[in-house]
Amino acid sequence: MPSFSYRCPQCCTTSPRVLTHDAALAEQAIHRDQFHGGHRPDGDAVTCYRTERWSEADHLERWITVVLVAVILLVLAYNTL
Ligand SMILES: [Zn+2]
Image (cartoon, rainbow, N blue to C red; front, side, top):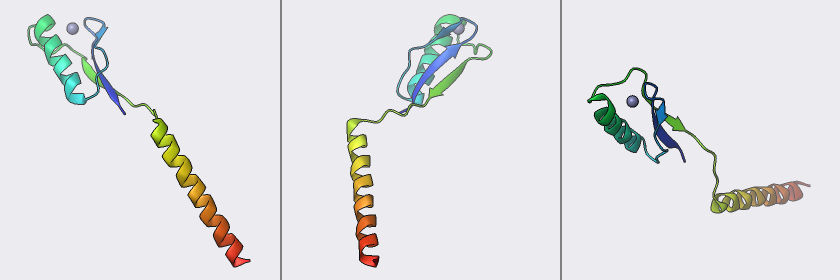
């Protein structure tokens, strides 16, 4: 699941990571209003961080799929002999 943060290079600050792009845009709007009078600081941006975090359910689902495919391949190989 990706996460997002807003960075203002003029203030050398980065918002805490949030779970949606819209939430990061809200951080951007709040920062612009509070510290820059609603102006857009040069170079400010929202960054998306992609992570490959698998839950235990994801791991179990993938293992079951691998085992089933292996069993199917073994059955097919056995039946063709
Ligand atoms: Zn700033």
